[in-house]
Length: 102
Image (tube, rainbow, N blue to C red; front, side, top):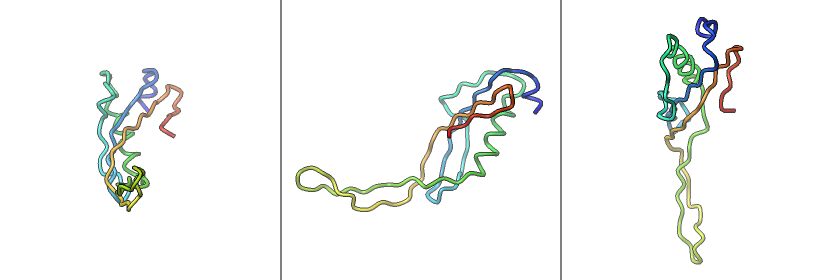
């Protein structure tokens, strides 16, 4: 709250989220697509995102196994849950509203 009250303007935070094969978030770290600028509250915004995202659950990623078929069109042989990584971006507006991926 103090960070929003400081009237820093809109703050963008992008994080890299690691999800295990059960859909659990196992790590949230700053994304390389986000170059943070230095201000007194930079860590607070990142911590707020980290605390929220660690509570989320995702549909697990799927590793798909294909079998070649005559004519070149592959056939879906099987799929299995897999670990995955994604990048999410959050924007904290000075109004107090937060915009996130969906």
